[in-house]
Image 1 (cartoon, rainbow, N blue to C red):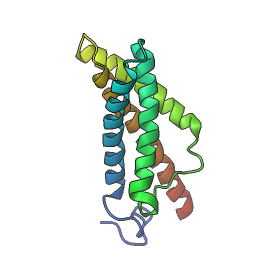
Image 2 (image 1 turned 60 degrees about the horizontal axis):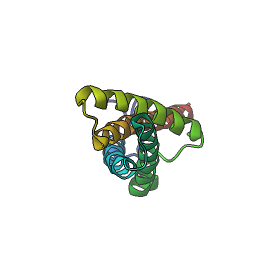
Image 3 (image 1 turned 180 degrees about the vertical axis):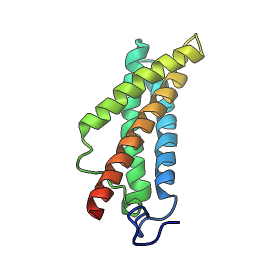
Image 4 (image 1 turned 135 degrees about the vertical axis):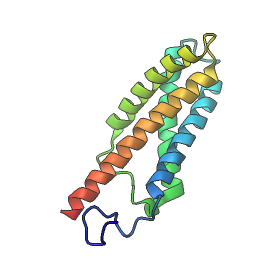
Length: 144
């Protein structure tokens, strides 16, 4: 167990398990919103790849909004200024492309909610990793 003054100890203002709860909320929100958006957009978009990318983009944005609304300033994982549109686009592209390929491998007659859920899930996992990494690096710089 690390002492209070030890640099490895977590900040005192942050509740235990809050980072885990934040990541879990973002991942579940991303998967659910991705499936919902893909059901809505499946009628308009015929290209499944674009459906996956757009779905992942919307899921990442919704996950960030829900994280901010639910945890707010208590989470000490506020929306960092370094976290810009580039991180959102990267998470959406990687999550959308990986989710599309994974959904095709899981089920051959492509199902739009499955593509949306996997794309949203992977995009929000990547975005939550970005958020936690930036917050961790900010805390490390503040400690000295």
